[in-house]
Image 1 (tube, rainbow, N blue to C red):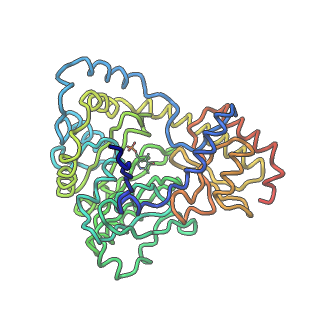
Image 2 (image 1 turned 90 degrees about the vertical axis):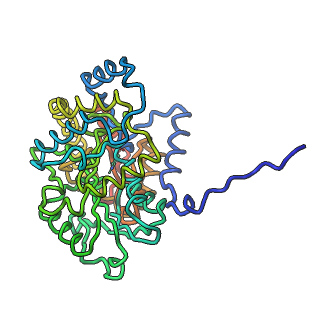
Length: 398
Ligand SMILES: *Cc1c(COP(=O)(O)O)cnc(C)c1O
């Protein structure tokens, strides 16, 4: 009997997700590569530098022990939680209870995506920065929550203006995502801003989830604070960290959440129903990274800083007004007059075979900007600058 094939439609949940704006760029990029074009990808936020050798060796060694082949504890290995506690105390001078105030994650994205399931009932509001990492919005939507946009505007130093959020929205708000150092704008928040956010969260009984994935990626001696340095923050905040960008470990999938014990227990409950912890060998290697990774991190930052300076100077030489980022490996650049973000990104791709990320892919408030990622060798950055220079008559109305 021949049956009609069943078609599987996306659920309402999936249909609610914002359109994937990079799809056309991805498709064009693949098309150009298939045609043999030399495409320079300055789009992806994924370190090109390998994981430091001592971390890889720790994984190799740990992987040989059968005791590490079994299910890991949901709440993570005690050694790893201890290493997080020690790292946190050393880095921020904040004390954590490793049993209750530390929760290992399968990458910070996992924690961001699952947190709304733990703390946001359907119909409740989550405040999300725009432009911002898309998972704040999709995690909220998956939980049946309502994302409410907090615009990050250049005139406000890319910090949300909390006073602009209407009272009727706040009445229904349970959760707020923040992210500093910020992707995509590269802004570092001051302690004064965190202080304001903590007071705001106390006043309106909102949980702050601070995504600190780039906490260690700052330049010229600048240090990005933890929101937990603010007195009273532990009562209303959790903070998410990642080993991905810090130690070039994006593929390993390891990060952690710290802060409010009740919230971490709720997130742990969601996780224990969905995943079964992090491969122990990776936790052992992650422990090593936190304990001994500082030198490798500093070498890394030096490389990014050199690339940053090369890129910024190159653009300035061409007459573009651009700021050198103080953090992250992104440069957030205003689009020249006469183009939208998407138009500029497509033009760069088609005419110069350079991939950049259009700002509107991070939300409507990213329109008017594009993001360049410094995860490419200097020679490639120089080649990209050269191509822009050669075609510069096209972009001269800047
Ligand atoms: C890369 C990134 C993450 C995800 O990091 P993982 O730990 O690899 O999941 C989270 N937040 C922001 C803002 C990022 O750019």
